[in-house]
Length: 292
Length: 294
Image (tube, rainbow over all chains, first blue to last red; front, side, top):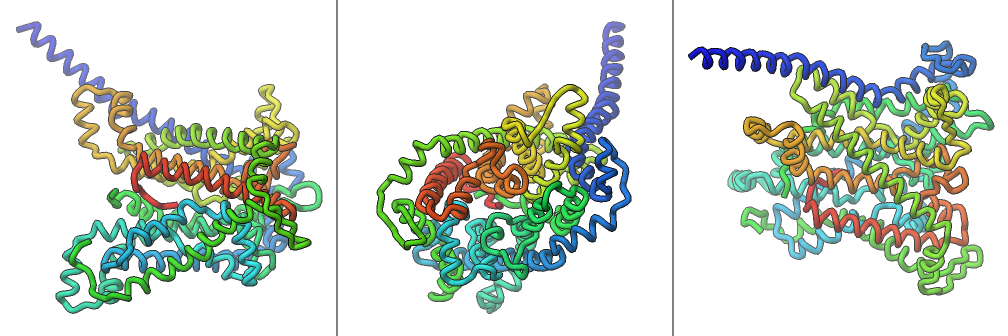
């Protein structure tokens, strides 16, 4: 009897100690580890932003992590030297046209493949899938030649049209449409809705999470394009914002770090803001989707 | 094929046509053109196309420079994949804990995804600058000399670290999504059965995450082979020597800076195509038709 009592009390003691471990020690250790990890990820950018405010005399003092005196000077210099205003407008045009066009074309093709009888559907899918195997670098020389032949160098067509077709989009929406209940389309047909009413009133609204996630990923992808714009957009009317970075690096002799980091700080704002805004949509778009 | 489809005969083809047309014009035609050009020696100035069979390929595979590029790219890819994926998985595992205040860590970890390789190049060039860089000076104070401008191995390591950091955000996003899809009841049940954290990770979490891991493996490889171009172009430009002259950088220089090497550049494209195809087919073989986000 006493032995039994003793056992329970140590058990209680144990569970209490474990509860403390679980509720106090564990979260504290985890928080400490996470803060360390986050600092590792954030430090380079934070340092770059601090440096974007400093004059050369300030950043040549090694380890000077204080905000400097050259904020306005650095930012205006970067803005005018790389023509960032114009470059940002140019890049916005491309980074909006491509995701919107890609989503429209993908939904259209996926809609056809899922809700119509399409003869040769496997062949069509196989052809679309080829885009997966043929990323731009493996066909860059002839694609560039093609662009010169049709005189699309230094045009927005040249920057956007080659990116519009996407197996990614078609397969994504096809996959999503197939998880939807067939009752949806039956109900729509009983109500006398035509294919386009069904597409615009039902299919597109229920796909908004996927549309949002794809838009975010494609916007960031296009905003960050480098190689293709370097080749095909050399005029000031079409030059893209990432090439501005190269311009800021390639000054005569010594890199003006303050100005370069100021330019960096401005160029990253649009994609960062959009990511913050659509972060939830992206995570939902990635998790709600069922595998096929 | 299900019965719930709309009856139109021609409408579906009209809906597919724009995508199909673009694929033919901008994907299939240039790829065939690549294949064609890779068999020729091209002189653009004289407009001469001389059929040389597989000579371009033979030359590449026998050239020290190409093999060097291939090995550099391979080592770099291995670094990005192994170090990058392990680190991201650790961070994602930490951030996915159901503890108060942890959602903020999720936001703070994923943002490097929004930064381009060129931007990341500029930022890491700053912190590793031989004179003013905080990292280089920090290392100097503990007796380590790091100079990405003069030392080949330091330059290579610099590209590896910057690229890995660049991909962290993307990797963490997908790992977080993958972890969220693992039913918590499964882990609780295992926990009640006495499985410790280590066992739960290797027996439950890791296997269930494998489609995500495989998908990320492919995406990181593609990044290391292609997207890294901007990072190299704003920093090392392939140097010092040829220490960071990755395949894509060499392809760019041969295809667009040297007018006589178009045949060779096309052959390089075809070799890249073979590598990418092999990888993508492997993805399908092992991971099935999974998420297709870029």
